[in-house]
Image 1 (cartoon, rainbow, N blue to C red):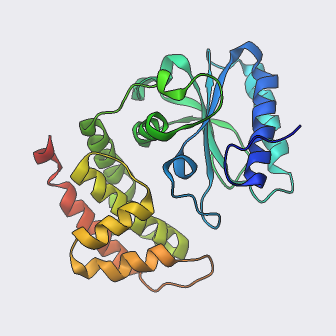
Image 2 (image 1 turned 90 degrees about the vertical axis):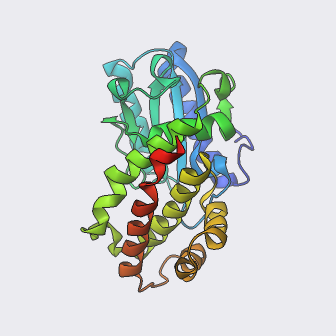
Image 3 (image 1 turned 120 degrees about the horizontal axis):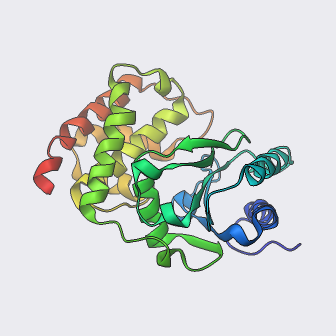
Length: 263
């Protein structure tokens, strides 16, 4: 079984080939397509820090038997020797729920990076952003073009989803920085704030490095050293910037208050 050249990384292509073969075998006629989004699609993939974001589209909801077989399949992939075996992150979404994000129809099989346990999970508002990336830049591994399965996401929807995501996930870290204790997560947080600021301003999504470069030119000079530090961070490289990261999140919260004026 020869891996396709979907990405510039042979070892990632090999894992994706395993995933595609497995889901096609298990889902049969229920399989519609397999697509990449996230950093591999948007152009900010980093071999040191990124994961592999995917979406499997199904014709209908999974049966319990299919779900059990997929759980076992992901377990087998997770035990392989590949460095990417634990970096798969994605969801299985039926056609009826894919076209637009509907919080009332957003509970689907989902696997998070760092583990190999497929489970049912409610997908939050960040899946509006996922759909935008898929529609704009999604990579088709198998199936019809993803743009035929997802509606375009307008600027107002992107801004609102970004605001909701910020308030749900990031704003609490101003007072409770538990998740920010890890240097890598702080770097991720800083770059994510840059991307959120870009979305608030432009109603669009760009890669985190591109957003960071934009932010260094368009936000207060105070934040430039912090953003530069996040851009060049590498695993195991210490950063003493917890309070400054919280302050940058607080700054993003202040900017987000201007959001209603952009509608």
